[in-house]
Image: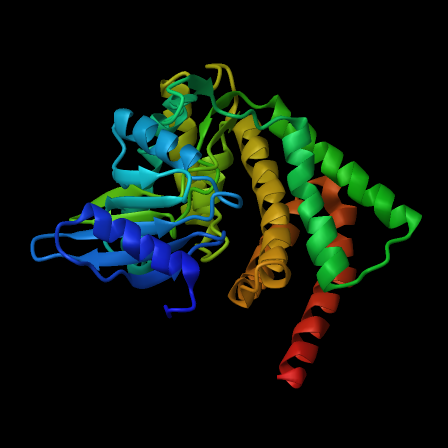
Amino acid sequence: MTLSDPRFLSLNQWLNGYFSDEVTPVLISGDASFRRYFRITMPDATFIAADSPPQLVPIAPFIALSNAYAAAGLTVPKVIHADAAQGFMLMSDLGDTQLLSVLNTHNVADYYRQALDLLPQVASVVTSQHFVSGLVEPLPLYDEAFVRRELHIFTEWLLGTHLNLSLDESELQMLSDSFDLLVDNALSQPSVGMHRDFHSRNLMLQAGKLCVIDFQDAVVGPVTYDAVSLLRDCYIRWPQPLVADLMQYHYQQALALGFIPTQTPVEQYQTWFDLMGLQRHIKAVGIFARLNYRDSKPAYMADIPLTLTYIVDIAIQYPELVPFARWLTLRVLPAFTASQSLSEVKQ
């Protein structure tokens, strides 16, 4: 940070107005939005300060969900001090250990079961209290418009902006039919409180306990969404037998807690799970491209190949989606590979 960074100067002034001793925030990360995080080290404790430009990423949803998740029994960053007008927050420090950084083939099943055991608490949160107005408000619904808006990110940012693909009428119809199937699948599932970005980079490990971060976009939506987000993580892939076993664990959990009807066969749950994962991954590759072009965060482009591979591998198992899988294999994946080769040549 430099003296030419006006938001950092304002944050520093705000923090020094709260602490009795002068503090020096040290940048530790920016997330996949416009928010930045700083660590403040004091003699007896450390804290995290967030700089969240209010016109781009308001802090009210984060604070409301932080309170709601904590009340549900989840360990989340505690907001100690906040200024909504400036977009500044001072929070408890959950450390630097992302779950992803410690996972291996020996411990992943245990850690993922621990993570799945947090989902009933996440599912219970369907409202939050606005920290300024005090009003209790329902979380947004993950409805048809929401699902289609997410799918359009793929069309706009990966196919259009990054690959510059021009689609003919048959391709457009195939995409429309595929997306309709995914929308119908999402809307057919029972709804619960949904974190919406529940994966190994958004679970922190502190003193052996899993803590939850990046929950400000929580909604009410499909029961399988968070489970498939975790088990088919965009950032790491695990053997299918392990994923199948953990999926069965969540299925039994959802049955036991009444999140899905007792007569729901595992085959139905599997379809919900698979197609929900497809929708999420299609959205994700679009977001990775958008982060590159709109937000100047190119590192996420490296996560696209694994995510596209997930999509093809699952889509090919469903007859209605075979044309989509083949199109991705023959048109999109080669175009993406060529774009990456061109990018490397330019560098």
